[in-house]
Length: 410
Image: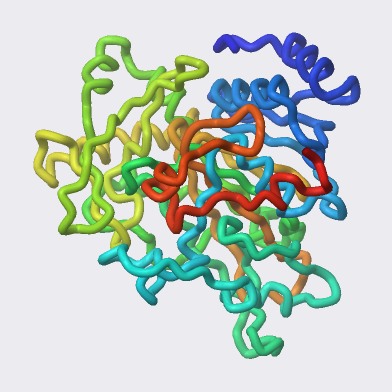
C-alpha cells in the first residue's frame, strides 16, 4: 500500500474482499492518519487476503476503525478471535495478580500468576449501575479490559451521596512499552458512548481543574499541549509517523540512530530500544513512545543511551512538544459497535476527562480493550511456541480453541 492512497482503489479492494456494500471514509486526521471501514462483519472468520488488507491498512493509516458491529451477535469471543490476527492477546494487568499483589504495581514482577475472575474485579460493578439498561458483554478472558466510568458498588447499592465529578484524563503514552517486547496493536470495541452534551460549549464535560498527572519541570508550552484533551469522551491520538516525516531530512538520520534505555523497575539494568522504527509492511518511519516519563510514579523514566537523566528529559521533552502539535493530533469519537485499532509504534494516545459517579445512562462510557504482541497471523489458530509464550506473554496465555472456533467455524 503506497503512502498516497487512492480512495477509489481502496474501495475496489474492499468490494472485492468484503462485498459490494462496503466502503471507506477518511483520512480521519489532518495528518493523513485514520481510516474508517463500513459494512465489514467481523463475526465471520477472515481469510488470509482479508487479513492482509487490514494489516496493510493499519500499517499505512496508523489508526483504523471497523464500523458498526451488531453487539447482539458480535461477542467478546469474536473480538478476541479477531485480535489473534494482529498478535497474541495479552492478559491485562488489571485482570491478574503476581505474587499476590496487583500486577500493575511497581516492584518485583515475579511470583505466581493468578487470574481474577470478572465477578471479583472492581469493574464488575458496571453491571450494577444501570441493571435494566446496560450490562457488560459476557466474558471471563484475562485479555479483555473493561473501560468504563461507572460507580456502582459490588453490593448493588448506588452511592447517591457522591456527586458527579470530572476526572482529569490520563497522560500520553503507548501501551506497555516498558517490556522488552512492547505491545504492537491495541483495540477498542465500543459498547456505549456518552450522548449528553450539557457542559459549557456544548460538550459532555468541561475542562477539569484537577492537578495534572505529570512531574514538574517541563516547559509551559509542553504542559499546555499535554493537557489539551478532548471533552466528549474521545480517545486522543498523536501521529508519530507524521511528526517524524515533518522534520527536516537533515535531522532524521541522527534520530534514527538513537537508542532508548527502558526499565520495568528502577533497579533493573533495562534494555535498549530504537527511538525510530520502520514499519515492516509500509516502510513508514515513526517515533515509538518518544516521551520521557509516560507513566510518572508507575514506571521508571526512559533514558537516551549516552545521555544523563536530565539530558534525556530535556531532549525527549523537546521531541514530545513537537509530536503533540495540533497538526499531528486526532481525537477519535467512539461510536457503538465500532472496533478501533491503533499501532502503538506509530502513535501516542491518551484517555479523556470523563464524568464519574454518573447517575444517567446518557453519560455512560463503556468500551472493551484488547492489546496484542508478536507477529500477525493470516490464518488461525496461531502457531506460537510454548517457549515464546512463556517468555513474552504473562502467564503463557494463549486464546483457547473454543474462542478461535466460536460458532463451530473451522
